[in-house]
Length: 31
Image (cartoon, rainbow, N blue to C red):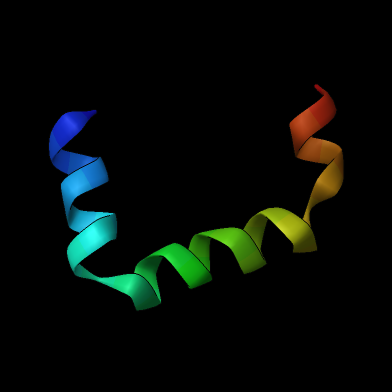
């Protein structure tokens, strides 16, 4: 997970993409 976290830090657009994806599918967070 550390490598993925580093990637998100070095690629802010991926972090925003992930956040937008989670907000687009809130139901998936409650499964």
